[in-house]
Amino acid sequence: MRKEWDTIEVLRHARHDWLNKLQLIKGNLSLNKVDRVKDIIEEIIIEARQETKLTNLNLPQFASSLLTCNWENHFFQLEYEVADCPYIHRMDDVQLAKWTNQLFEVFDASIEKFQENHLSVTIHPHEEGTRFFFDFSGIITDTSSLKRFLEQPVSSSMEVHLTGMTEDELSIEVFTKAPMGER
Amino acid sequence: MRKEWDTIEVLRHARHDWLNKLQLIKGNLSLNKVDRVKDIIEEIIIEARQETKLTNLNLPQFASSLLTCNWENHFFQLEYEVADCPYIHRMDDVQLAKWTNQLFEVFDASIEKFQENHLSVTIHPHEEGTRFFFDFSGIITDTSSLKRFLEQPVSSSMEVHLTGMTEDELSIEVFTKAPMGER
Figure 1 (tube, chains in turn blue, cyan):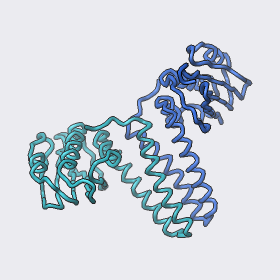
Figure 2 (cartoon, chains in turn purple, red):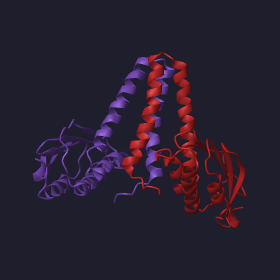
Figure 3 (tube, helix red, strand yellow):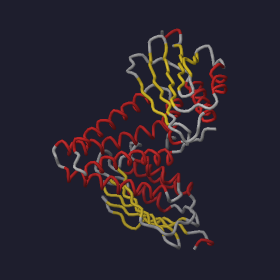
Figure 4 (tube, chains in turn purple, yellow):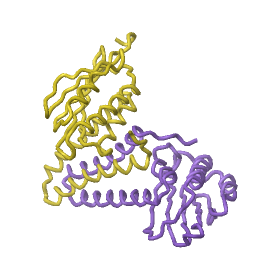
């Protein structure tokens, strides 16, 4: 059950995140660690660039799901990376976002709560389509639910493959085919 | 005509604003002006506190209007300040936000474009009601439209007074009465 985010709440969370970064700068500055501050600033700028790249994929619902995920009290922390992409083809944003939100729910129900659970999403746009790698590390308690969910066919333009699973790691590859005219 | 803001766009604008602040820090740091950086950080924290106070007034639509105003290509820049307030009474958020958005439109149509136009909003919550001061400074080209709009009665719980007007300044006081049970 995803909540609808309103302007006030989005800004509240964004402000909170940015103020945390600022506190890090402030703390290091008070210790006179100017070089560390410069490094932190560079890291923040790189992170913001990733956010811009994600936003520019033209997948507003999917991007919103990733950008608000860590504000939603899931039992895992999400991080993401978008590879440089000369090709951005049309994708079914609604379908991709819906599947991703379902994946988040299945993870919440299948992992050990309050542990160091991480989900890393890497996005590689290519000419023939876009690959999404979902790599989980943490403690999985219910492998069969996850398997069941991942074996469900999504659509002819979106393929889901479980590429690896142990008790503390799981890798998924999602491929969305570019529409015929755009390949 | 207000646009509906979505998560992606709110984050895009917020990110842009925060990166500007970070650039200011970065610039001063590269000039080794550590004390200036510390002052900038304090200013940013004070500004963020104002944002929090505005958000806590429990007027989500009105707060959204103020928070997104400078992203909307108006012909004025908005700033706001919320006085400390032990009393927060219920107000008609929708009515207040609607009136405020109309005020923004009337200003856009009644001031010299691309000038140094500023609108400052100060909010003083009191036991008997809340006072909003809208102080404009800039170049007014159409005083009569503004007057006409400000003379329109709004509702029995919301009074609007034009308290001062010259060609380059205009002051409005809005008073929203606290509901009987809350005074």
